[in-house]
Image 1 (spheres, rainbow, N blue to C red):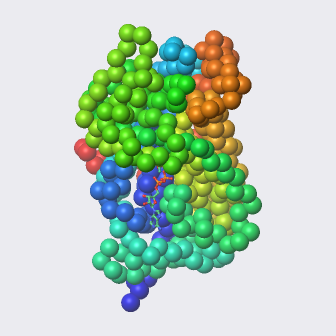
Image 2 (cartoon, rainbow, N blue to C red):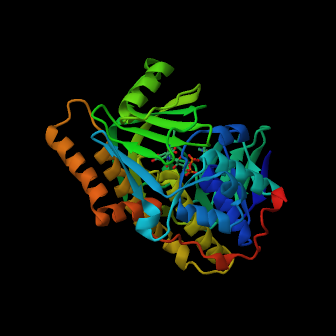
Image 3 (tube, rainbow, N blue to C red):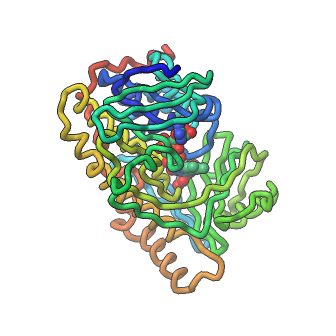
Length: 414
Ligand code: FAD
Ligand code: DHB
């Protein structure tokens, strides 16, 4: 027997996009259910992004998700750009008149969100299977899934939010002709990322172009480092024992008088790199948000921040549609988001192209990369362009006036 249910918004995926959407909708008095294929423990441990734009931090604070972020996040004024054996600091705070970036891991945002949704007694189901969306040509699309105990559910919704990542089921469920444009770019390299019990050897994140490939030194806490190395797209991780990783990081990131601190590697993995944008980000009453709609290569740290920007706009649009009967923002959702999506897509592509080096690269290409990097550290105008885009571009399209539930300060930890 199938259990029949009703909700206003059916959300597929409990990544940052789906969880934050459910939280923002609840503040506006709109009901939702979030269904997730993986376990809670898996979602809370999945190592991914870590760099938040100041716009993302401000939103999370404004909606009651700032307590641990403010206590444990590492606020940075800017980044280091390293090339030709020189390391330069670019001060975003100074260039933008006060904007900054914060290191706070995606795992921690997901934990904070799950705790907040659970304390709010939200409908949040982990370990579901056989997820389907149907009735997409009607005003009442349907979400079907089997719960972790094997029970089949059918949820009639007023809208569905596809927050199910790049490999999810929502985007492929859009009928033929429903997507006008799928723009895609692949890159011949990936990032080998490590999480290490080694105190960061830098106060702010280092982006490094080296003749043998890109390297990035980030961090999670004062005791834990997060570092990345450019490797071939099809690289086999078994070719990278821990000692080789540390040696290569020291070689690429090294500058005179600077030593990389090493320690036990807690986790390692290789992330492929891709740019992808689906247009429009909606089909009637199904809306795509985050990685379900677009992917950027990680250089520039835009993926998570874009997911947050999408759901800030989507929550406002759905509250206006479903609570106030005004469809204007829901109709314009895709158009509103795509402006930021393409700005971030350009930034990520540009930073990737400027910082990665492929074996046997054309010397003309290398000279262009170095000229562009030199320009960034010598021209205030060029540095300001990077600073504005890196820290968050335009304000988020979140309207706090949609709230009916005043946000008490972090009630679940009080
Ligand atoms: P996701 O976090 O992917 O969440 C989607 C959720 O949907 C998942 O939990 C998934 O299990 C669930 N789901 C999928 N299919 C179904 C289904 N059929 N039914 C139910 N649930 C389903 N960005 C950066 O800025 N910096 C980085 O260093 C960085 N590293 C990354 C490393 C990896 C390996 C990956 C994949 C991404 C990385 N990103 C990085 C990108 C960033 O993490 C994402 O942009 C961000 O996670 C997007 O959030 P999301 O909620 O849209 O999607
Ligand atoms: C991190 C990831 C990025 O992609 C980036 O550009 C900067 C930092 C990180 O994981 O901390």
